[in-house]
Length: 496
Image 1 (cartoon, rainbow, N blue to C red):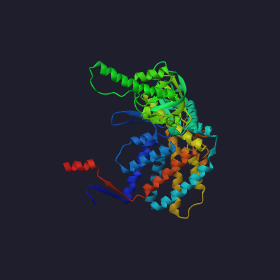
Image 2 (image 1 turned 120 degrees about the vertical axis):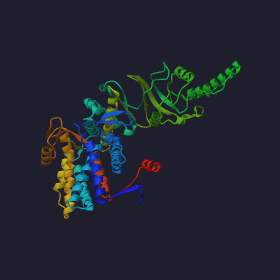
Image 3 (image 1 turned 30 degrees about the vertical axis):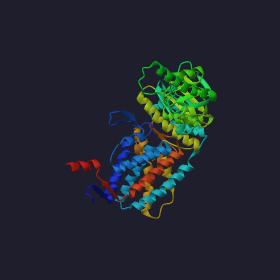
Image 4 (image 1 turned 120 degrees about the horizontal axis):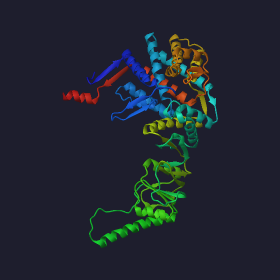
């Protein structure tokens, strides 16, 4: 074997996988639910943030461990596909592998465990689908957004923010929904249908609202300049005349095409801004590239590089208005694609970051319910329902497969058990009551097991459980781990 590599085989490899998965699950388990604890994340630059967002915590757990990296990718994939459920997914993987390790100690083989897990997964998803509640898309979006925000720092404003997230998801896809934070009170959060840029008009006296053709420029709206030193006044006047002619040619084009608003990704010459003002045209400069792309998508405009070469096909069409709040901003409402922006005032910079993370998840799950308006009861109820359904099915003929199937059912209860623990409730008591009546849920506020009005998208539950099983199975099938030394260590040894 290469001296720069290390091989871990058999049971040692399995134990290493289980230990790593369990440790990562434990790292995020305390953050689950409305009464989950926060974790302080401090990066290498000393920047810190308090959060209970599972995806953020997993991402921050920087490590060279290959198992941890795989689990980090699982969390990232769950976040991208379902917008929420990352903490649940990681906890479930950890519990499935822990129980698999116990079964192996008792004489089971990984392939028998995998078969039992796959059978149980199919039965669990069957139960989830059978217990899904159909709703009107906007109602489903509002309810799941409320669940996503509850337990995070934005919870005090949950009613208003959940409504905004649901309406935004009804208007546009998550990629076309922008969240903008600025100083203020979250009570004043509002939804704007259209693209919002945190820019005011480039000059005083421009109209507050226009409607019609819009022009998007990548280059600076100014005449060409030359870095030469000239002392002759006639030469200076000649260059100035050339620049004026250059600008006048562009001005004539803008007038000819009836342009009502100009957006520049870079700067804008004072002569250009004054021309726009006199013509009653709205102008904006120094706009982010990402905002330019969103405006282009919303208005149907092309981002052009040469103003002297434009024609009607390059222009978009929109209603553009300017507004003043804590910051000046402009709203662009186009017809080519639907876009929405949620303005979120926040008291501090840290609160703004937390609000943004909470609303990103809420908008995502709301959008899932707009597309597929089926929800399931949360607060641990759906996991208890799935566990009961698995146990009620016909036993498998192979005892090892059957033991694995039942272990899967028991592993589902880790979610309600964690919710109960975070609320200071007795874990065993909660498990017994939920097993007896899975329609109930964990009320973390009243510290009781009772009927709850908490809902999650069916799509998130299915995605989190399927991902946990598929990735858990992949890790369970791993027989050997070949680990090369980090390149820094190799060079360090050779230098010595």
